[in-house]
Amino acid sequence: MTGTRRIFMTGATGFVGRAVVPALRAAGYTVRCLVRRGSEHELRGLEAIERVEGNVLAHETLERGMAGCDTVIHLVGIIREHPATLSTFERVHTQGTVNVLDAAVATGVRRYLHMSALGSRPNARARYHKTKWAAEEAVRSSPIPWTIFRPSIIYGRSDEFVNLLAGLVRRYPIVPVIGGGLQRLQPVPVEHVAEGFARAVALETTVKQTYDVVGPDPVTMLRLLDLVGAAVGRTRVRKAHVPLGLVRPLARLFHRLPGFPLTPDQLLMLEEDNVGDPQPFYTTLGLTPVPLATGLRAMLG
Ligand SMILES: NC(=O)c1ccc[n+]([C@@H]2O[C@H](COP(=O)([O-])OP(=O)(O)OC[C@H]3O[C@@H](n4cnc5c(N)ncnc54)[C@H](OP(=O)(O)O)[C@@H]3O)[C@@H](O)[C@H]2O)c1
Image (cartoon, rainbow, N blue to C red; front, side, top):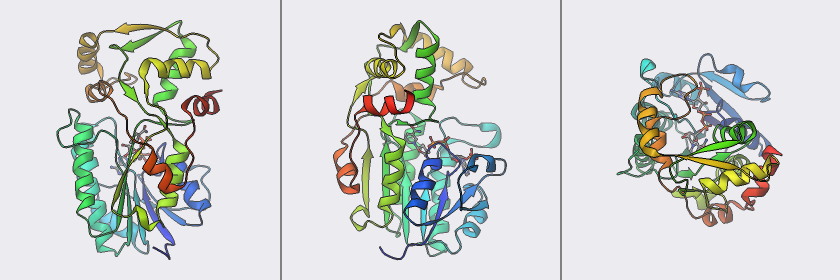
């Protein structure tokens, strides 16, 4: 797996992508980012990268963009659908991945790294997970040496989820918790996800492997709120449970309103455990797990 020089990357303008780019640059790779029109500003501050305009739903932009690249890192994913722009889970996750794989084969790419999500499976309740699974299946049937990463919640300075919790904890005396709050998550720092991608590019042992990408500490939502509270200097986080039976219809009614924090699909995912085994990822990639409390203090303190 030697000789990789130029990496074509999708999703570089996103939260995870903005961490992956510098990790790849630090490892000595040339990075070419697929950028949607209007999103260029998200790459501000990322030095010495190539940019090509395109969209994973526009096949021709992918082949053009990949010309001369030997590796593809495909990060694109959406948590909310935008039917007005035909941006659905099926199209972006599944068809988008098929398009990227087809273009990679057509342009002679020799290495492919894929971002999926923990919980993706064929019979998942959430369409986010179902369509991510279908994308994984397309990757597994590709002739290009592939690696799949399946993270739980990823946290870092510009994430959505932990920052949302931190905002609630800082601003309000009582924080709402959906349902019992006993579902378990296993947050992983974005720096480890980024470094994992950078190291996997040239690591033969990761070929045809699928990794859970999770931190060392599975925590319930209640515990996560307490850890976030501790990280922002609260001795105690008071919580009010909001019954699922109330949140579900609200999410169905209001999820398209700007600022409404939850979609029905996200709710389905929040209702289930999202935990895995950190060991194969951390050992293979030679990374050292960081306790969640430490990572959150570094992020929020
Ligand atoms: N964040 C997490 O906790 C988490 C956990 C598990 C898995 N993941 C997966 O990790 C990946 C990155 O997540 P993220 O948190 O970085 O998401 P994000 O901040 O929303 O970024 C998504 C990226 O995808 C791009 N994109 C969306 N639709 C596109 C299209 N049709 N064509 C080209 N690019 C398109 C966005 O471009 P624009 O800037 O133009 O919108 C952006 O660069 C996703 O696949 C997500 O499912 C994330």
